[in-house]
Length: 332
Image (cartoon, rainbow, N blue to C red; front, side, top):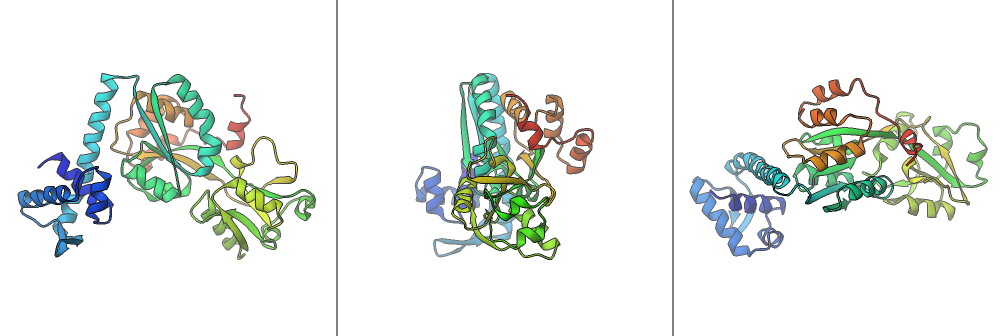
């Protein structure tokens, strides 16, 4: 059994049993992938895949049993290489992060700027997309870290460290009737067309649940991935915007009014997640510390080696997760 055969097997499964796509991902030929999987099946004396002619149609029960171990082996092999690289050349390496547009635009720039100055020879990679897809990249060990809110809790393969709490702002044109209210209610918001994030992005699910818990149906007429796009359509008079407080910016737009909504919605928590079996290098621990500076570096290392959620929660009991407002008010 060769490690290359396991990589081929993993690629075929991740590409929905499409051998051509797997071969393209691996920069090899389709016959080469098929041949290596055939050799693996012969060595193990089982059929990993179900077939109709030459086409793969499903994974056999024996194949599922084998695949449970394949991911662990490939992740361990990757960790071995990462650990060796740290000692062979401590000043070279990479840091890959998967996250949403909001985090990439508003949170990561100052952190990665500081990181790049401290580690100028580390290759930085930022992948943007919807939270579920980004969490899958981290769960599959395809990236080092994922940064996300609620969705990250759905992935048992990930160890998570809370970075900060955040809430929302209501965005309306200046002079809007909501700016004249002493305190806006959910009923007030529900009476207007709402512009906010697409489902699955930037705490949208928690926003919807808050309305539904109050027996209200939000009239969402426009959704987008980008806060600036939401603001643009608020200016055009499409309705009332609800955006993440990180997206408000230090200077509000002259034509827009931003109203805090933390009395209406529960806080969301941004967390950094990574696969529990991965090796974390010294400079990657430094990145985690930059993302969660309220935690001592030794505490972060302890959390990284604690797989059970209950045990991590015990470690975090003596800490208060800071709010984004408190972090953003600190001097640079």
